[in-house]
Image (cartoon, rainbow, N blue to C red; front, side, top):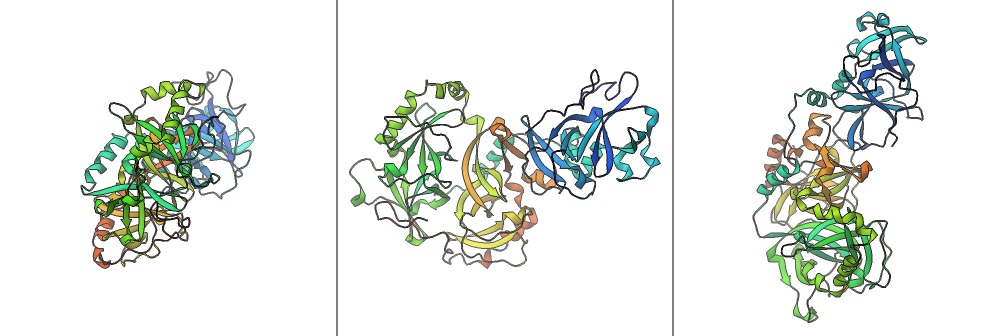
Length: 562
């Protein structure tokens, strides 16, 4: 993304764009300075003192529930920048961006980028040539102008736009915040997570991260899973290591050894693809941060909340007479679906994991880890937050992991409930509990898409009501430094309630919009959902989930891949 002001826009010896003071935007000989630009066949200008810089059109992240004039959010040297299409703001006809298109970053109490067709130059204007906006009726509304300039620089008329008023016209919330009328919420993730934690059920259920290897289903207890990430493009393969050790990766400036669960289970190797995930498992140690190993699996499927009563110890006939990596088998869907629960403690005792950890220790002082050692020493869990990352309309969103009760597949049928909002898809029976399900695309104003195998239901606790939200896919569980999470610009009341923060990662190359679960449904909608439980039979069998055949427990034979 280019961020350097265009050549020729400055004036040698003149004020720097964005500075303030008694002479801001005015030369020593009394001329006023303006940055002129074009929209269609008209010439407009901003006062020089309001212009911070001029950049090319950057890559942006779209934000739902905001005015159509908002192009999206961009990263401007570590700062989240709202980018607004000035043509849409002024109700002019849309046009495609080209090499001449620029973004004028103006000060509206906070930086805002305004897309224009073409920037012309910095112009000096005598005060006598500036007239009141009331003296002329032109392209835009008079109340959006600070004045007009006549017969200067070959233009019959140059309209002087009021940038703060333009922005407030579209984004009243952001304008109030800039004026100091909106309160800034304190506490961030810590307060939100603490509030959700108080609402979590105190029952005998456990949460499992379900995964697939060679078509069979396994799971880790969620407290053993540190995070889930994509397989990185670069893996440092180390010669003369055991075949089950894939190598080392750099995960946020920390060395992480990778092992293949396929190889540990003596299964045939397959090329890595977009479905593979790295499940980062941690074994906590007394007085220490614990040991971490990344386990490459074929696919991460769901986050399950299951009763302890459906767990059975692995039958002794399947035990190999040593410390078994499978500690129990979970019986789901009336015993039709068996999930083998892996034990992190048992896996860390295996030679494969010991070799991987030894490889990590050997390279801790190498060039690969030299840059990360100091950062890792000062980093602890209080400086990070965990997000469940999901996709919606090709955009990445995240929700604090403490808000997520479980993640399940979308069933083939949902029981439609009359007199509910359009975005409420219906109800399902989730282990005897009535669960209302919301189509997140419709909630955010996106178009509906056909059901597919990648879609998932995020089960969130919204003001004490457990509710499912259909998303396009769940991609990973990501541990994010709190320093990378910042307030999102307040672009609309609804957007600010739902998406108040942005995770700004990889030097701005990746932005994740962070969702607050609590305001997803208002009081009336929650009341309507609470009153629909009678419409679903709690003792009815759960609807059959799509996505293929269910794998068997480990040791019970292979099944086809899901």
